[in-house]
Image 1: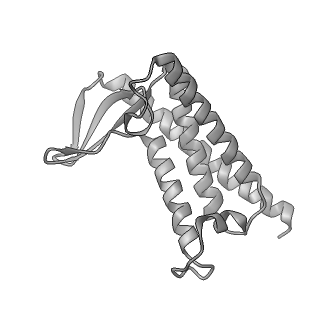
Image 2: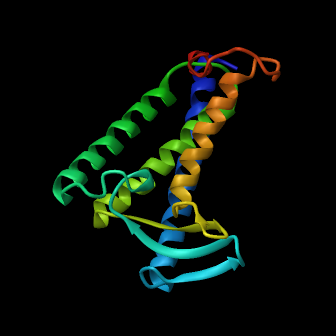
Image 3: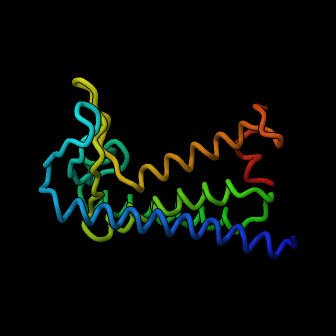
Length: 178
C-alpha cells in the first residue's frame, strides 16, 4: 500500500470514528434533554447506574465552574478548538500502518467536538450517566467524555505495548511517531 493510500485510510478511520462519536453524542444528549428534567434521575441498573440530566458549566469534574461565565466560556471554547486543531494535525501526520491510532485520535476528536457543540449552544455540557455504589457517585458524564477517555487510554496502552503486542517500554509519543 502506498503512502498516499495509507494516509487516506488513516483519515477515513479517524473521520468515521470522530463522526460516529459526534452523532452518538448529539443523539443521546438530545434524547436526555427531551425526556428528562434538569436533575431528574432514572435508574438503569439499580444501585449502580442511573440516567440523570445535569448541565456542567465547567470542564471535567466541574473544573472552572466557579469562574465568571464569560471568561469560563471563552477559555473552554479556546481549549476545545486548540485540542481539535492539535488532533487534526496528529491525524494528518505520517505514522505507522496500524488502525488503532487513527481510531483513538478520532474518538478523542469526536468527543472534543461533541462537548464543543454543547458549549457553543448553551455554554454548558449535558451529562447524563451517573455511576454510583452506596453513597459514592462518580461525576456524571456523557458519550463524548467516554470517547475521550477510551481514546486516551487506548493511545496509552498502544504506547506501552511493543510492535509484537507484548508489554514493552515504548513511550506513548513513540506511538505517534510511527
